[in-house]
Length: 129
Length: 224
Image (tube, rainbow over all chains, first blue to last red):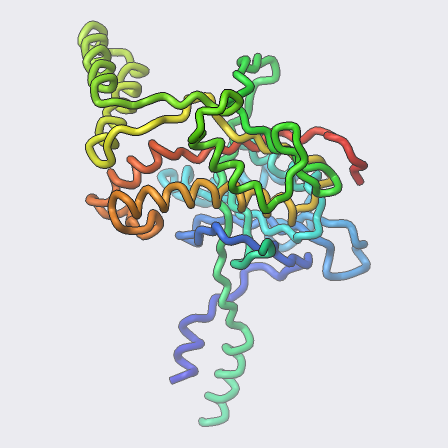
């Protein structure tokens, strides 16, 4: 019984996390519908200390530079049906210690590539009492 | 057999990720051509929220604690005491909406090709629906917005906190209105339900989410 349960709910992780992301907390959240239409950009310090401690961007399975984002967006768009393209959401999974500079740069790239629906990925909770 | 099943169970146990993704959804503004001229906006229609590299808030020129931000935003959205430094609310009355609809219908009859007019007419008709549902209301001027600016050195944590408080302000107002008029919370209205859809639209018309994520400046403080 349990076996079948886990077999069914298991979703193979698409990408190995290569950056550590501790999500910030927020209360006013919405859950993302249609996971197939969500693309993830991970930002945080690398898991492997050999890559340094500065926050890096991870797209799919590898580290990336800011300049890689437009092409990545374009490829993701190509992979979807024409009708679904406007519904693609880009979810930013950003470590909470990250400075906004890099996040802003990513947002600017997304704007330039017309990927305007974004989601700041968080965990449910509140730090403000 | 039993131990194979057991091994498989362990395997799936380990690989399972109950990854629920929740977050704060935002719409970025479309890219602007470089030579675009920014329209002059009335200062009272902009609620300026600055976050510096030390994660401190400056709201409308005054330092503010994050705990007061929600209250501040709510006051901006409603301006209950008609303060002169907050947006001038416009009364949306049945008569004025009807008049606008009539005028637009006439204009469309004269040149039926004009898409802009049709869009405008739709907007006003939505307002009419809102009035039917919740009565006459006060509306924010269309240029009113919360402008959120951060420094490059602001921490992401703080940025999300601020976004969260600003969302909380709108959600609280919407909830209040929804409870008063429809006896359900705003987020319990179902957008897929034909009955609820106009209600959601009406509430959104009264309390629009207006947050502009301006491009960052070095607004003081050391950015790392």
